[in-house]
Length: 275
Image (tube, rainbow, N blue to C red; front, top):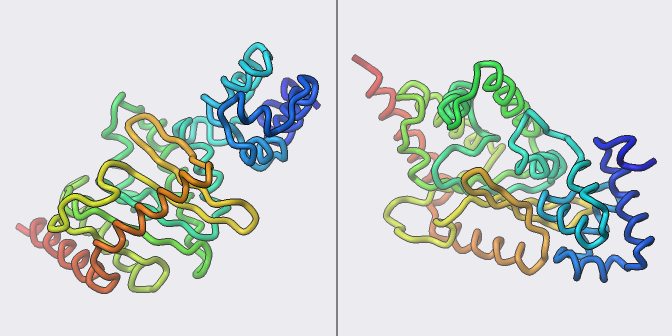
């Protein structure tokens, strides 16, 4: 089955890539060099386990001279529910056995309460309709279901102190949000570490990163900026991200002290709400 017949299927997409690659007389290694991708990533795409980013699909089209097929027929999981650049990371998030996230400004999506997430999603630019906001909100809240099991995935959240101090939605919303994070930490469902302002510059200050490990796939890193994001799979690059995370974690407060700080700031918000 060609991808034109079933564009939403990663399996048919991978089969088509393999067919086109073999027709061009290229090995996976040769295609990886020409398309500036890792051979492992190409192997995963052909096996239906992953999909290429938009830029990768364009390079595949260029190298294989396919007239834009791989760009036009990217699998559409997540379309309309999350930003295009996050769709692949969302799929991987659901498969991961270990997740370590660093958040410099906002509470990570997996840990957001409904009120906090609603404020984030309705305050962005360009403006969203209530219907668009509610659709994205439902997806964001649904993501948190992976935390319903006690042991898997193992989740570590490394939060800059700015995450706690930025009053998204006002004192009542922030109080609820911080108590929620603290409750997850105190129940041992997640580990939380806060990077206090006093640390100054640290290894992750310049960006957002999520690290993921799997049972039968190599680890990946997802990095994100304004209106953009990318899943990184090259082992050396992923390892650099892991080392940077470990370095920043070494500067953070302990889990116990972080929970105490989160509870304290949540109480400050409660007092600010009182007349």
